[in-house]
Image 1 (tube, rainbow, N blue to C red):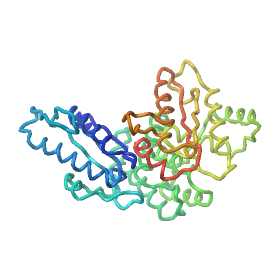
Image 2 (image 1 turned 45 degrees about the horizontal axis):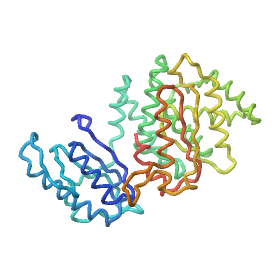
Image 3 (image 1 turned 180 degrees about the vertical axis):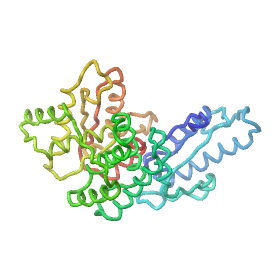
Image 4 (image 1 turned 60 degrees about the horizontal axis):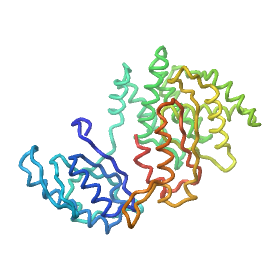
Length: 376
């Protein structure tokens, strides 16, 4: 859609969607000639999918009758007369065989051309991205990055929060690009080494860290481990820890630096650890440290006033969290999360940073609906 300059809406489907909501969606798309990509389409209930098949059959049938791209079709859809533009199109993405997913009914599956996505070529994606960021040894660096993830998946312990897929690759590339602009005097090998360490070290368990260090020294022989200098942030973290009557131990401060680095390259992250492990104090101290270093005359500085919006996702229902349609009036009412995020995004006059904190246990029920939001 970007290449063809087409308006495209990506929508994350859930089992709360009914045929009336989908009909409303299709009306707008057909009238505007836009595209829609329905993410995780098979999360919709099977009964609703059957009705969607009938709706799409009617729309695609009318589209077939159009002779050229300059024509428009007039049809009655769901009790409303609409003018349909020929550029209207619907795409779906789905993972078959997942828990809590439906199989697509045959009459619906027949309306879409299947396209299986295999494992992407990380090396090629990395190479192109590195060249785009101005690296001269793009191919060589991409090979090293792919080998790093391959060796990590083979040699390190299997943990549910370890991820060596596309998102991890993308984050390393982003971090390397950021460091390339920040430290142009460093060698490209050093920049990639730092990016791989910044992105991966925070999530590894203590026993896996020596193994990861060995992989790094094998793949980057003779490359000096970059020394991180956080300057004023280190001083501020120490001061704020003491103000909160916490001991600024080396490990506690290190975790704050890791969180700070991660925030620069990701817009969604998870703090994982046992109860009483210091997760809350870690982000609160970092929040206070960044706020204290704010310079009003430097809106591009990574240190800005930080506002944290906290909610417990398990204390309220799914509908209260994300929003829902009223059964009678068909009006949409926003949920708590939607309202918090909207308020945070609306504050674009100030350079202030907003962190929306879902403080509670993670389960597939509520986190699944964040899928599209957390995607890159």
